[in-house]
Structures are given as C-alpha cells and as structure tokens.
Amino acid sequence: MNLSRLKILPSALALVLSVFPAASGGAAATNTRPQLFVSEADLARIQSTPTLPAMVEAHASLMANAEKWVDTRELAGGRAEYQDPSGLAKAREVIDRSLTLAAAFLKTGEARYRIACLEYIHALDAMKSGPYRGQNEMRGFWLSDGEECAAIALVYDWLYDSLSEDERRGLVELCRKRLFPAALEHVHSDGRWWFARRFSNWNAVCAGGLGMLCLAMYDESEAARQLLPRVEASLESFIRPLEETDGGWPEGLGYWNYGMAYAFEYLMAWERRFEKIHPLLELPATRRTLAFPFDFFPNGKSAGFGDNDRFGPAPFHYTAAQRLDHHMAIGAIDRYLLETERGLDGLMGGRAVFCLRHPGTVAEDIRQAKQVAKVYQGLGWGMIADRMPDPSLYLAMRGGTTTEEHNHIDLLSFRVLVGNEWLIENGRSGRYLHPTYFDEHRSKINDINATYKNTIFINGVGPLPGTRTSSEEVVRGPGYYGLRMDASNAMVTDNSFCARLALMLDDQALVIVDRVQTEGLSQVESRMHSYQEVEFGEQGALIRGNEASLRVTYASLEAAGLARATTAPVDPAQPSATMLRWSPRKLHTEALLVTLLTPGEPPATASVERDGGHFVVRLKVNGRGHELRLLPTLYLAEQK
Image (tube, rainbow, N blue to C red; front, side):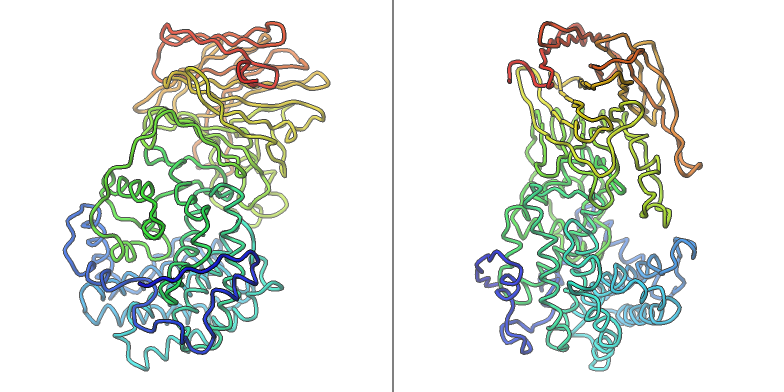
C-alpha cells in the first residue's frame, strides 16, 4: 500500500477536514474489495492448513462453531430477559455467529455458510426492529448499534465479491432504514452523551463501529459520507487523551480491550480505504497504549483495577502492533499463544478475525526486563516486579483518580502475585446490578467503595469518592525499587498526611510502609484481603495458596494488633475474602505501619522506631537484614 503522510493538525475540526477525501463517492479512495479489514494475503492464509497449535485450535473452533450454527438458529440466551431488556447479549451472540460463518465461507468457499451469515444479519435487524425496538430506540445510538455496524461492515467487505446485487442492496437498505438514520439523529455534539467523551469505551464502540460501516458503504450511501466526519471528531477525543496518561486507560483493562478494538479497527480500516496514514495512529501515545495492558498482565493474570479488570489479548491488538511496529506487544501476544495454545478471541470479530489476521508464525521471545518499577504518569497506576513478563513476585498499586467511568474507590490499594497465584487481592466485585451499580448509590456498595480494598483507613473511612492521589512516583536505591503514592487530599480528615511506600527488596520480598498524620486523635488501619487460606498469628499471618505461600510480618511505631474479618459480597453466592486488619491499639495523631511480605515460609522480622527526624525500618528475611531510613514524607532519607 502506498501511504502518503499527513500533517497532524491540532484542532478536531482541522483534523477532520485534513483527513477526508472529497465526499463525491470516493475519487481519492480505492474501491477494490476487500478494502478495509483483510488483504488478499489474509484470504489465502485462512484457506491454508495451520501448524501453530494456537492457530490449529482457532481454525478447528471456528469450523466447529460454523458447522453447528449453519443449521441451529436457537440462541443460547446467556442472560435472563429481566437482566437484558435491550437484547444486547442476544445481539452479540448473533454477531459472533455471523462473523464466524462469514470466515468459514472465506475458508471453504461453501455457499451455505455465506447464506446463513446473511440470514443472521437480517434476523438481528428483525429482532432490533421488532421485539427490542422500543428498548433500543430509548437508548438512542448505543453499544448494540456500534457493534452491529461493525459486524455488517466486516460481512459486507469480506463477502462483497460473492454477494449478488440484491444481497448487497439488501444490506445497504437495512442500514439506510435504521442504522444511518439513528446515527444522523444521535451522533453529534448535542446528541448522545458518549459523543466525543474522553476515556469512554462507549465513544470508541459506538463511533468506531459506525465509522467502519461508513467506510464499508462510503460509495453507496450519502449518509455514510455525511457521518464520517462526526466519527472522526468523536474518536479524536477518545485517542488524544492517551497523551495525558502515557498510554494508560483509567476505565481499566477490560474496557481498554473493548474500546480499543473498535477504535483501532476503524483507524486501520480508514488507512486501507483511503491509502493514507491516519494522524491519530501517528501519535506516540497511540503506540504506547499497546504496551499498557501487558504491564498489568503478569504470568497471564489480569492485574488491573475497577469494574472489569479482565484482560486477554484480542485479534485487533496483534494487527495494531504490526501496523505500529510494536515488537514488544507482538512478542507478548505470541508468547501468550505459545503458552495457552489457544487462538485469540473477544468482541470485534473474535476467532474469525484471528484466523484471518495472524500470520501463523510466532515472533522471537520478548526480552526479559529485570527489577521493573513503573508508574503511568497521568493515570497513576504503578507496578513492581522482580522481572517481566513472567515475575516470581509482582505488585500492582492504584493511584490516580476515582472520577472516571468504571472506577472503584480504591486509591492506594494493591494486589500481590506470587508465581501464578494471587495471594493478596482487593475484594472482588460481582455482576452489574442495574440501576444501583451506575446511579447515585454506586459508591455505597461495599464491593465498589473502599471497604473491601487493600488501602488505608482513618476513623473507619478509606479514600473518598471523587478524589485522586496528589503524586505517584518510582523510587530506587541500593537493594530496593518501588513506588511512593500520596493520597493526603483523598482522605476524610482535613489537613492530614497519608502516603504509602511499596518497595521490592533484593528481588525476593515486598515491604509496604504507611504513614498517617492527623490534627486530632484518630484510629488508623491498614487493610488487606485474600481469597486463599490465611493462618493468623499475633503480629503476622501466613497465606497459603494451591502452589505458593506468603508470610505477612507486621510492625508499627506504636503498639498494634491484628484482627480478622470477612467480606460480605453483594451476591451471597460469591466467595468471601479474609480481611487482615492491622491497626494501633490506641488513638494517635501519627501512625506508621509496616507490612513485610515474603514468598514461602521463611523466618522474617520487622521493626520500626523513630530516630530524630527520621523513621528507621529494620527488616530481616532469611537471615539477611535491610534498613530503611525514611523521612516523615515517606521518601528515603538518601533521596531527599
């Protein structure tokens, strides 16, 4: 493809005007098919016999599902009607089947798959125009519509050459009657709330999905050409804020995957359609965001925060990494494929896109990084690991803001992975319960507020809703590296100091130091949770998983005690976590609490004392001693 570079212009309007060819039917665009999502090489690849185990599994799964769904039209219906009044889950099931059948047709050339694919597309239209019409119209142009637009775009592009004139006309007419009018009504600055919304997966899914459909039908529809500048304006507000967060995403890992799938697929499809480089793909932060999830995916375990911390590489991620020449992301995904021997899945095409896009060979293994400590500036999330991407000991820690969508009230909270097991976690949240989960009562839910988070409490109250940490930074010194975060402005008491220091010691232990100072006498507590077996002692505990264990050793400036409690999740059927509560026995205006975490069951000791204007923390693990001299600000004395 001959890509001509475009100047990146600062304003959204200038950007939109600069990237579009004349809306005359596409004189500046290519009209060969497929033109958006796959190439001739991709079509040849899906017809070949794969040898990579993950590809073998993906192709087998694709064809098994296609064979099942070509004749069986009954939907599984994953949610009860009262839980899914809009039919979103059913729509997603139909979309998954449609794309699977389209890919099966590309692989085999058997017309029955193509016919069934089109029947599913029209069945979805009938469903959303019939029994679910009221629910969908009430929502305006929303997630279900964005996902449907993307699916129709893929099918139209993939199958174009095999479609009869009537079949093409039928798909265009479907969009002309329902999807394009809804978009023209709702997708603009005075329309739906998500339009041009920063840090919102809704923006990317709705605008990106619509944009893909506009690209697919650019020559056939005046509405498509009219809507495309609106798509650009909305998506610029999705992508450009990545420059403020170093590529991180405040909604969390699951919603990063969801939103980025539609944003990246649209941007890459735009490039193929118009044979130009899209300015948003030239931003350094757009490239950096491809690495973000892997810093919070140690040993294939999701380590994020918020409503949805689940992550697994999706097909778009690989294609975007190829487009932006991101070798680390390519290597991380290929490593995942080798270890799991399963193909990539997920929304926006799932295994169908994976079978078309992945070359079937793996890159060289990614380079091992040692003694890793990192903070995503502007986002506030941080992590520590003895090595990456396969650490023996890993900690993720939460700074930043609690004001974005899907945030929990979990500032200063952390989680610890030992080998392949989470031995310390925040209390888990359950399924979305509408409307409470997203209305004004959200912060009252203990699964969401600070109650079940591994954070600091003053007089029984943790970090407050609508607050943020004032600083997050990496600290390093001889024999240690880690993170320091200050949440003084997020706490319930005025004019207080509240900060947390988390350090890795000699790549073999973690220490958490918390300091709180208040104007009046206060009850201070450092709280942790585990879903594993916990054996309590007077000044510590032993956490035992199935494969790993973690010794917890406490210390305090003043006499303190350890108490046990249990969480009570919103859904009583969900497991409860054991709560470890470390707190001074008396009220004080100052508290300094130490938590030493050592993998296995080695002998360990911890103590803390005041030495003039410093605090001296002494630790011993396996007979090896460590001494940390801390300022009241929780900086290391040798650093400040």
